[in-house]
Amino acid sequence: VDNTDIDAQIENDNGEFGWLRFCPGDVVPEFVWQGPVDPVDLVPGAAARARARLPLPVPNMSPAPEIGSVVNLGLWFAVDDPGVATARASLGTAWAEVQGGFASVSIDPGDGSAPVTCSGLGTPYPAGSDNPDEGPCGHTYRQRTPDDQPHQMTYTITYDLTWTTSDGGSGSLGTFDRAVTFDYDIDEIQTVGTD
Image (tube, rainbow, N blue to C red):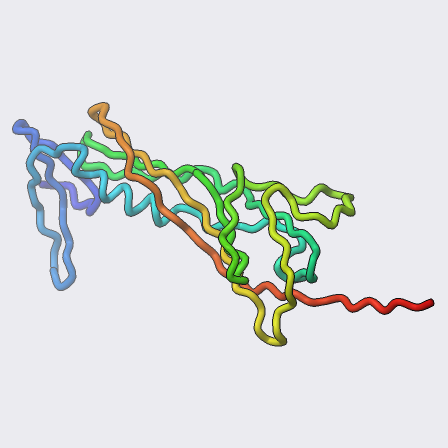
């Protein structure tokens, strides 16, 4: 083989694929042959790459994490659209592609209550609104957090993973979660009545 490109692949008359392999400790690359490939065998490699590309949730909530909230003020939960992550693994003319798309988002407020699952991406707080009630996807804290002990709020996006192959195959790989956790402080506003 004259080609010394480490990524180059060639195919012989038997349908075998050959390429240069360079392993740790090798002084020079070694040329190896691989028999015909079933594209479905490439799915796990493509899936690992796709999972690594799935974005973490980006909260779009009110009040924002850096501000925190107060007792009895309704929160509004949403996330930015994470888009679709795609990855492909190939060998010669065979390939497998895995795609991860948004399925749902849930938020654990961190106060012991059940996680909240949003419809779609959730509902951002309407600009210019003064509505104190929680949003369609939201939560209301009933107690303040102790000093220096904020709640640990967790946003979790669940992705659906699907695969396709160069020979027309397709299927589902189930779901995969990506999560982000951050501090969320709750204060209490004291009011004083006068005659």
